[in-house]
Length: 77
Image (tube, rainbow, N blue to C red; front, side, top):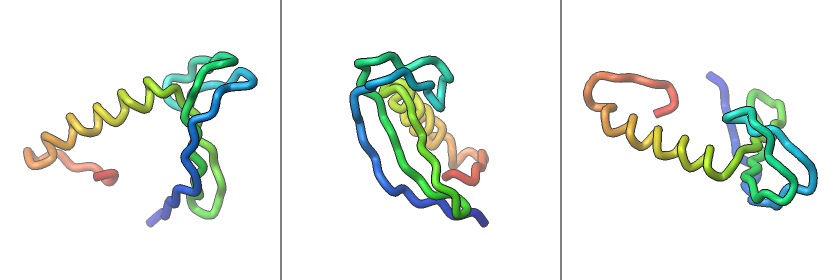
């Protein structure tokens, strides 16, 4: 089984253009975004995403988890 650990969660203002890990669209200069540092299988990664993409992802997981008892299964839950 793979282990993942969160190292940091920050919400900086972009000083250069980044690409969102979720929607793959640009995060423009001056935009506040979410940056999460993680270690997965011994490798360090940064997840960079729009605040809105993160919010939508959390809402989607919450909606999905409401149906968890109906027989759906997922390794993430």
